Length: 234
Image (cartoon, rainbow, N blue to C red):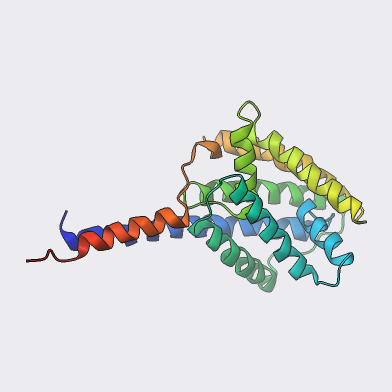
């Protein structure tokens, strides 16, 4: 390979994978937006954010950041890589959610049947987005990374069943902090895992088989590409 081609190939590969992961995160965010518009109860993670905020002097947003950072620490302890996908998750999801809320393309539901249908649609879209953003192998967001890390340690169980237990634990923690679960909260605990297994099966995707690239690996690959691109000494 020509020296300059190595660096070009590096940026092309990571660029295309980043675009694919970003597209998946936008789809994931739209699924989350649909869940919000279902208006039938907080998700377990959002309930935990609210519970922490209610019991401390910090805002809901700050509580969400604090919990995310705590989950990142757990991910690192579980030896799950933190990479470009993790950074994209932190940036894209919030911006995409703001965009969908600004567009206001799906009305807030108030009747039970439309609420349940929209919640289910949100779960399906969210799981499809998860497949699309995890497939490029640039690492997951903090919560998905923890789910995958637990899944690697429990290979006999489906990733969806592990997610049910994880969300159940998060829900229990939020209830312990005084946040009562809604109908949608309970449905999300079980529904996310069931829908996840179905969607992953239909899309022939097993997240535990994806070899994710961490930031250190990305940096090392860049240094290698840049070193190859340097002109040889005479």
